[in-house]
Image (cartoon, rainbow, N blue to C red; front, side):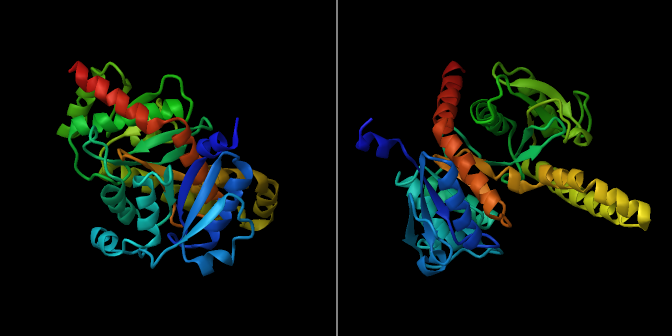
Length: 343
């Protein structure tokens, strides 16, 4: 392979280096870790050059583009913020995907600003009427479950949820390497007639689908041990479920720690189980997963946790690289177009 072909085969990832609670330190360190472990990527850091240079100790396959300002994590008018800050680190990173300068963007900046910016600057697939945030959550079997939509659409039509489900089906197959992904509808009961009118319509739509492997309704109590690879509902329902998991895991960990710290036997038990507790914490940590892809866009956009440290940001970059490598968006477009032609 000649040098020109080597350059063209590299995946270029844009990083919003100024978005997030610990920017730019963790973003820069996560980028350097990604370069160390992934030999087919280049990274462009968008942000304050001077602030980035404090932490950039290895610039191999990493370049920096100076930005002007950042989008505040507590921004209350994300659309206005994006439109009036086109030279911010987030806006420049998103624009680089639209212009094809970069293949993907990773940001741990404000969620709603990233979604708004992605719509404005990257653009939505014509074949999908609604985007969706799709985080991966750990499950009892030691793998991951796709959870969507985690806050992108508080209200949605059944047919739009089907498009989101098709996207998740392809993502599970190509990125998570699941041969025949299964999908369940997060609902208040397992019976076919349960839930709101939306839930019942989606149930009937998915049940008769020739592509989706639908297992039926799944109750929230089974969310960490589901009978499927993908769980779906509207953004309001799923976001509540996701935040309940996060809060419960954190609370249970604190309660367990309190009990184990009582008395001499408890302290001995805590000492003996220290490694197990550490492994439990690791399994539930968002850092281990990386980020949530925003489904339905014309380019790859991955939202990392706002509190991401270097490991979490590295994993988000790794995730973005895999999505690009597996051509997920192109395959989604082909599937939906073929599906529409058959109608």
